[in-house]
Structure formats: C-alpha cells, structure tokens
Length: 330
Image: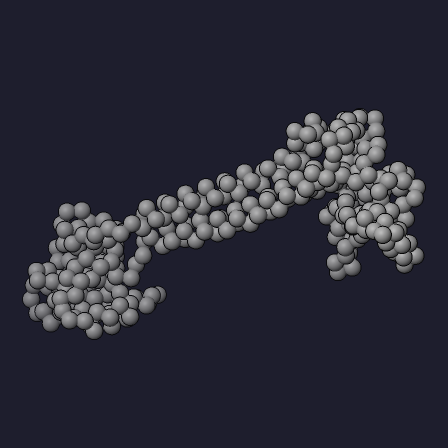
C-alpha cells in the first residue's frame, strides 16, 4: 500500500494480492486442461479396420467397418458385460467387442451397418476361443491359435470403449478449477472493497499521522498472530481489511469465544465505537498458550489507552452503551 511505507502493512496487503494471483493461475491452469481436452477430442474420421490390420495394427485407433449381416456371438467375458462377436463385410471376417445394448441397437437397423470403435489387441484367451469356435463342425484342416492373425488380424474393434475418458476428466477438473478461481476472485474483490473503504474514511492528515505512528518502533507494536497494529493513538486491524480505530472512539470492549463440543476453537475481541458499530479484532483460530498471552496483552493495552472503555459483556454495560450511542446519534 503506497500510503503507508511499512513492511507489515505491505505484507498484509500482499496476502490479499496473492488471492488475485492464485485466482488467475487457477483460471489459466483450468484453461490449459480444457483446451488440451478439446484438442484431443476433436472429431476425426475413423479409419477402415482392414487398413489398420494390414498396415499399422495398434491400439486406441478410431476405426470402422461396414458389416453386411448380424454379428455372431462366440465369447462372453466373466468380469465384464461385454461380449465378443464375429462380423463380416463384403470381403473379410473381423472380431468386435460390445455390450448387449450396442448389439440390440445394431440388429434393429438395416444392413449394411457402420460400426465404429477403437482398436484393441486381441488377447490369447480370445484367440483360443475364436479358433475353437471356427473349428466347430470342421472335420479336417483344423485351425490353430497361430492362425488367428491370418484370419482376423491382431486387433479387435471395441465398440464401447472410450480411450478419451481421461480427456473428459480433464475437462471436469478444468471446470472445477475455474469455479474455485471465481470464488477466490470474488473473495479478493470483497476484501479489496473493505481495504479501499477503510482508506477512504481517512483524511490526508490522518494518513500522515498513522504512517508516522506505525513506524514508531518505541510505541507501535505489530501482533502478527492477530494481524493487528497497536500504535500510540490507533489500533489498525489488518485481518482481510484495513480498519483504523482511534482508542478514544471505543466505548465498549469484551472478549468473544467460540466453543465447539465444549472446547474453545477460536477467540476474538469485540470493540464497539461511539457510532454504535461493532468491530471484530484479534481473531485467533487456534487457542494455544502463546496465543492466549498475545490476546491478553492486546486486550490490556487497549484498556490502558482509554480508561473510559466499558469492559466486559453484561447488561449494565450494554445499557450504558445504548445511552452513549443514542446521545451521539441525536
């Protein structure tokens, strides 16, 4: 913050700026994930299955075959809903893998039917079952497992496989990162508004006075755990805002402790100013001995700065504050 040349104030403001940087980074990272996925998912034309078998048999290639008759079941997988079928086009036999829904969809159409999917290497078990099925009814010249690739090629066509599933996951991650980035950006904007609002309340003279006091090493104390400055005449709350309160404007102060399951989880100090507004300072989420000592030191120091401050939460103080703030308003 250019108004105050102070390392602690600048460091606190830098933490706020870091929210913006994190948000932009997450936006960029999410964009990279989504962009990569879209690029990988670009629609490509399938390659004729026989061309792959003959020229470059490999896995995960988007391929097609136009079949002229109903697929013939020859194998079922014990650990999957998929089944293996023989299919044929005008020239050759092929092996395809699909589930029952895909099969029912195929037989409901008129032939020829174009089947598209992704290639996978045929397993040894699949080869054996396919050859055994081919040999049924044959009395002579039985086929051997070694003949499988000559009959069907080394790859099968999986009609239900989606090797681009990982890309779909990246899109989801990219969207989630974008969503988180938006939330962080909203938090940044919200906190920035409070910072600017706190600065606008100060006159030029007050800014100069505060700038001088925060750099007074003898009378200014910065409590890092509470993100709070106590100077000669002001307390400066740097927890997600830039809030300057003059000690003379404080009329009431009391501790606030939040408990969960009977245990203290966090504590803070509530100060009420002459305008009737409540301000939460010295928020500490972890209750330790060191934090308790810092907390008590802050509390006692503020009381010493203004002996007229009403101390503690009770009905008497609450009624007195109402009188004071009502008189101030009138």
